[in-house]
Length: 315
Image (cartoon, rainbow, N blue to C red; front, side, top):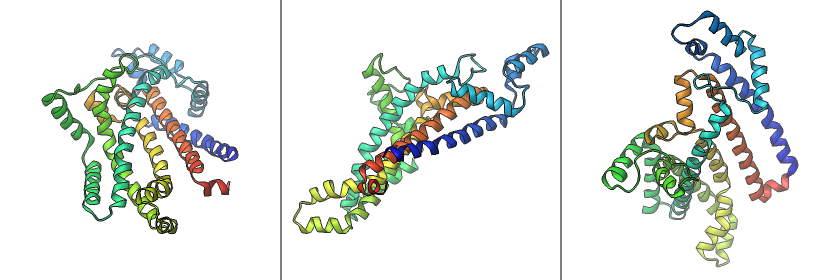
């Protein structure tokens, strides 16, 4: 098991290096010159020359990348060209917001999607199955921004149950923080719940046709025992991998949802950085997002091995 984890980590290292190279080079393709924006309207040539020297923009691109990579390995993601604030500090400010939103959305998705998929598989070709598929297709089809606006009108404006927008730190007031995050988390969870439902249904249908399931039923076990103890353990294995990858996607930020509900997370941070040509922030956020994806993929692989005895036997 430890050898397997070590191999996966070794694979992740060159992947991260390639991603860092793409992140660095792609920002070079973005239009505009941030130094000119920093120099102001007067654009003093002396100031421009000083800024280019300060940010090593006069060096060859290869040296610029090596300098940047060395700083990243030391935990220094650079300084925001717009606010002159360390990028690491900006990310640490937004990270708790994004993590809270991602965790709540994932909880909603799992609580809705997996039970719906199990029920749809067990009650195949019945009204419950058709309803579950209809809801899943609706969740995949309805745009997040439209659903968010409709929820604000219904829940906040007409019913007055929850605040329409904004964010409150969790540790400052947990209850108020949860109230502000319920609607955006639910909006984010709808397509995830739909995907989990479809994958759970498909996986459970394959498992419930297996020979060992027929054997369990022939022994006289109750349908609940057959489904929950024999079928569910194997049926959820591919769903675990999908859930980890979906959670990694949530950590990347949800631009439209955060804009609709005015949530200061990763999505809003990177949108503002792109519009302001704040390349250092764009690089830092994209790199952190890539690391999150790789970590979640690694966790999914480890969980898959832990839950699947056949995989452990091959290691």
